[in-house]
Amino acid sequence: MTAAARFAAHAFDTRFADLPYAMVQRAKVFVLDSLGVGIAGASVEGGEGLLRVASGWGAPAVPVWGRTARLAAPAAAFLNAWQMHNQEYDCLHEGAVVHAMAAVLPAALAATELRGGASGAELIAAVSVGVDIAAGLGLASRTGFRFFRPGTAGGFGAVAAAGRLLGLDRPALEAAFAWQLAQVSGTMQAHTEGSPILPVQIAFNTRAALQSCELATLGFTAARAVFEGPYGYLPLFEGAHELEPVLASLGREWRLAEFSHKPFPAGRATHGGIEGVRVLQAEHGFAAADVARVEVIAPPLIVRLVGRPPRPDAGASYARLCMACVVAKTLQHGALDLAHFRGEALTDPETYVLAARVETRDDGNPDPNALAPQTVVVHLNDGRALRWRGETMLANPARPLTRDQHLAKFRRCLAFSAQPLAPDAEAQLIESVDRLEALEDVRVLATLASSPAR
Image (cartoon, rainbow, N blue to C red; front, side, top):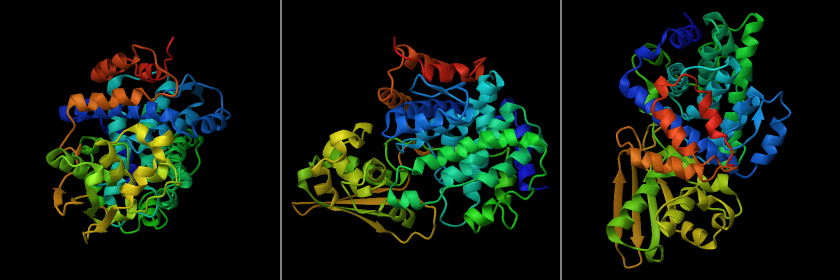
């Protein structure tokens, strides 16, 4: 049996009743978190242009979060996926290095609109299997990534979630994976340069997922060895890989339960540096002006992803993926907020004076996908060297956010909606997701996420 067939079987055989209680609770946490982050992303620079382009992609049918606009299903999924990832604030599977919800949830909610509704239990099951597949593809890799895995792997997860909700049968879902392989895209060049096109790569793959599901109904003879063939996804996009353990884990290990929150709006690779500085400041009471230099000593992936030089002219996408920038912002403010990457705050000269004192160094970790441990050493002007070491990053499943922290992040995100939401939207979204498994029609979530203030 091919990997596509085994993934399709997992997508169709899994029922809501099969999901462990703890997994369902984590699913609800990340549905709410993802909606909040997607709403906040509506106000990011460039959104109006993307909305204008996407508005020409078909008749409006699906809500865009944080806006009053409706777009054709692939276009709405495209924009919602971009909004979810454009601030580096969306949840992820650390071991897989995949932001799967950014592709899976927008595609799944668009599919419910096309279908004419779905229950909360159906949505949870669909999202869960989609995340299993997207994260599983990342976990199968044995090399550092050259292609942008949150987009490439995320798109296959979106196919599984949307295909299930749209009522594809198993052969059609296998064909949809083949159509997705024909469209999969996204390299690490945008990440390397800190280009705002980076999150658009998730959006491309999310839009393609809905198109793949539609194309799969046409009866074309589809490629079979989508994932493992000599020119399949894993050999071409990942290189060295080991897929069998992932396939064997389906139905036994639920990847969404392994996801990490993003407590700070910056690349996950920066979070050890941010936390280390915050902890040391809280313990020792020093100010930014007291700092001579900062060292962040971390696995090579951290250096590769965020060990870039600070550049005040490079824009928000670059700054969010720059350890020196985010550490400097944290030294200045004792925290990191969405507002720090907008307007005058983004180019604050003092940030870049501080950032020039921050160095990110490779600790020699042999794991090409490791994000931890990270060590932060703050050297003060008085000669003291203060050290913090984090074995596991904050908001990892081993150190989850509290409910109060989770809801505080959600509420802060809603404050950045492109168009103010209805006064009761916040409370209704929280209440609806809290009882998601009992919700009769999840289309209410997108309606609330796009309900305008009167």
